[in-house]
Length: 281
Image (cartoon, rainbow, N blue to C red; front, side, top):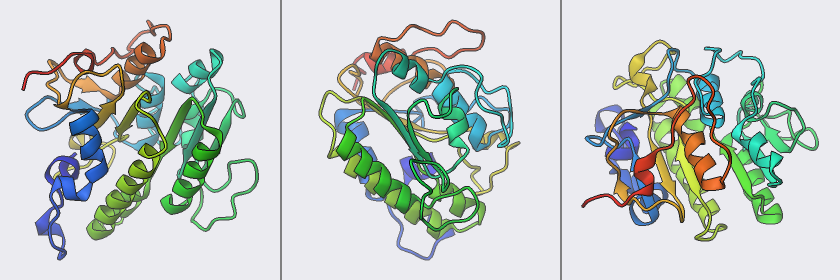
């Protein structure tokens, strides 16, 4: 959230500083003109539920609408249908693309239920792209995802990028900032393909500490951010949240938009009601 709302940190790079709108112009255009930001400084927070703030539990929470029972990156496949599964169940054309292979475990309770290309080894054929282990660099994931979206026009589409996280774990702040810029460019390219009737949510599976460190036990790394835009959302700019929000609240919000039944299971999230109401200036 630090770079999204305040721009690059001059103390961590020799490059000229970038304000938030220059660093991620497409996100800010989306959140200020057509939608709203959740988790802006002074407007409340949105966070992963934790208590271990690492990627796979974060994605399980985003796509399932409830905190993950597993708290590491070796979680088993989700045992409850994801939001993507629910959409497919009512006839939607669904697809998921991601740079990290393990997101496939959070995306669906049933392998092969819909179009999915996650990491280097998932898709219709073996992905012929370079990379280490289960990770496919974002430049390849972005190209494949945008080409698929333009060709197939799915009703519900998930895209997970990971280069900022990769650079951050290496302590490479300049690479991290450049990865954020490239991710924002990908958002812009996708926005060119959608119409005003499309709902768009952009968020992160976890954050980082002010010291640029991150490991699962750091409570600071739980804080994230979210941009939401679409015909059902009336709020604009930095929305005021009356109480702390969680990643688990994203799926319930989208269930309202998509007309899906609410999840009433234990610890499930709640719709982010402030997005549906105009905000005072």
